[in-house]
Image (cartoon, rainbow, N blue to C red):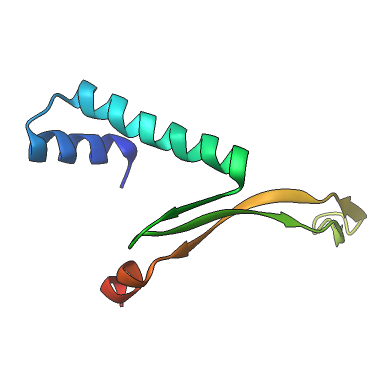
Length: 90
């Protein structure tokens, strides 16, 4: 499902224009990103937890050439689903 499909579905469900819903959805996504940048964690009850974790640097191999490549440490966003989501998906 894409953001556009989510906007269309919510607009129909709540009787709002797609432009209004798009602004709300984008605002929510921007807020999630800003919070992850500032605090590194955001918890949405019954949905899940987004966390910023740091991966260690490592030595890897280029599969095409076989050359050894150093991969630097980097930050990644992880998601752990909440209990309710976990139950509904199972």
